[in-house]
Image (cartoon, rainbow, N blue to C red; front, top):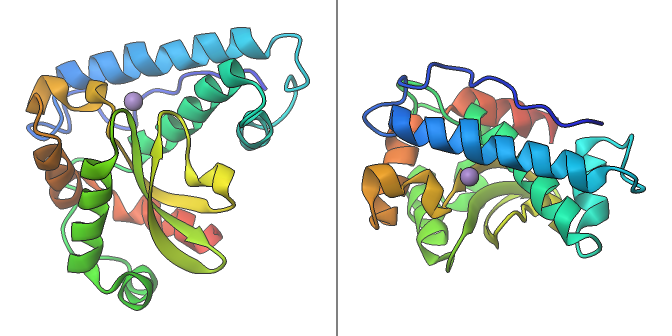
Amino acid sequence: MTFTLPNLPYAHDALGPYMSKETLEYHHDKHHQAYVTNGNNAIKGTEFEGKSLEEIVKGSFGKNAAVFNNAGQHYNHLHFWNWMKPNGGGTKLPGALEKKINEDLGGFEKFKTDFIAAGVGQFGSGWCWVAVKNGKLEIAKTANGESPLVHGATPILGCDVWEHSYYIDYRNRRPDYLKAFVENLVNWDYVDQLFSKA
Ligand code: MN3
């Protein structure tokens, strides 16, 4: 497949004050666009031409760094834009998902603490996640463009902790960014959609 950059599912200024128009202009219009452009160039003439995005991400991991880094980040960011919405966050979760978080992650407050700790504890660039593995939810963190997808799991929520995602709005305060992400931005309906398909 050829990668293309979709429009954001909301206006660039719709996530303020938690994520600014300027951040989304850089992050979506420039950073994500670069993964799309560089990914398409890296895939040209390789075995990955004509494969699905998930096949490319899994197949290139550990084998072709140029393809993997860009395809991995394209996959991560396609979901990331949908993992947020204006007036998101809160503690009212779809019922089945809430039940599963209670069972596997020790309840919403423990999920929130552990998810933020995973993002804060990721040294350097990367992501923190909630993923489904062998039928159970787990919290994870990965470096750079990696995701739980390459570790036999299905990501249902992820937060980008590369500095480009928060430095304009939060400077070095990554914990404050992660707290705002959970409290004010998460689109739980999209998490639930992925959860029900996982
Ligand atoms: Mn990013």
